[in-house]
Image (cartoon, rainbow, N blue to C red; front, top):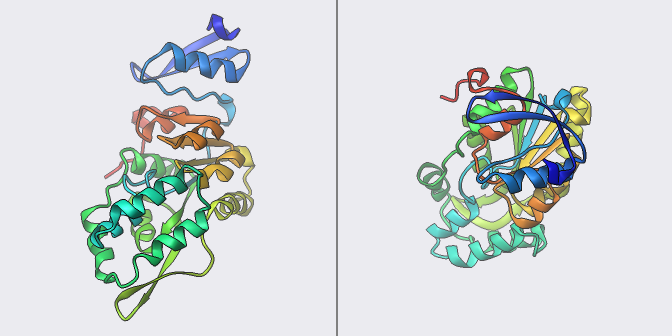
Length: 271
């Protein structure tokens, strides 16, 4: 770490051959840049060792806890996936207002049979590798977990139950007589909602902010990532990655468990 100006104080394996702790003195930002530049396919999380076993995780759903964007897959059943996916990508990159972009995309789904939601859930939704182990380990260690999504309750509720979250917060699709109305009911769950959920949950549980963890991939996750004790951009859009103090670009979600100091033997069962 000569280039960073840091001094290595100690090293120890969290998981031999997989994850290592490096104690150092020096500038944290410079150290992360040096670590990421020195090793290929390596994720480096710079943090205080004493604070790393977080007691709360607040997580995004689409492209974070699951491998897809649900609205894009619903659009595929309607035959308009390319049209909607382009808007989704731009919204997640922070190029469009999230709320208006969501309402405009949902409007294009008007008339889609409600039954397609269950079909999409069964055929397209895949849990992100490491998601169950991450969330269940935090809860097994006495922590809490909240899924907060700019997507929809019809996906978020079963996904949260599957993975092991305490609760889920998401948008509600308008449905009438078995068909989507093209509307989102109530206020949009967007960037500020995600931030508020994290802050309110920290307060309700009597935690210090440093004990919280937020993880997401899109621009609407930035506010909660910025206020969390550890904010993680997971295989994220450039704007989100730039705003996050920690990034996981190469590994799956279990990289966060290693960053929290948990070797594989300490992980909760994922099945």
